Image (tube, rainbow, N blue to C red):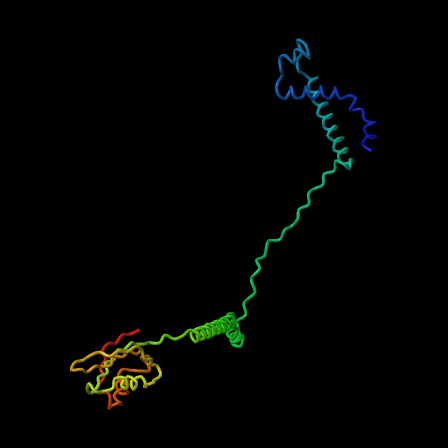
Length: 238
């Protein structure tokens, strides 16, 4: 459509005239240029009524040209300027957090009944108790298997007869006849005392918890026919 319109227009073929008129208009507005005016108009050129007429023609031509351009811009779909659409944005409304509902006494009781860590502590206590019992049982078994240390003593006894006529072999037999739990008789010998009298010196090992020196003296002195007295010559812990 715009092309057909331009076919019938002659303004484009006379464009050099409009250019020349436009140049003269600006020269008159800004002041004459010496070199340019002498070159174009020649010597002796001056402004007059012809200059006013040219200015009027130039203004009319410019107005006509602007009108044609406006028509072309409006008729051409590619040159239509669409105004940007502005989107109305409503101001942001502040959202208030929901009001917290006060807890009722029943809910507080339920929260108090909830124990997040109680079950774990109870399980740990049970496991610790079981482990402690198992270790005590193992210790008791080990202690029962291990032989207990028995305190023992080595005792050397001096058994004296009444006189030199006492049968020392019979006296020793009487002493060794004493049998007690925790008593073991050892070596013996006859030691001279004087005036032909000899005493029986005999060794024994006893368990301290079962046999004591008092018990030994009491048992040996029961043989009154052969034994006058009993003395402890030596006592050593084993």
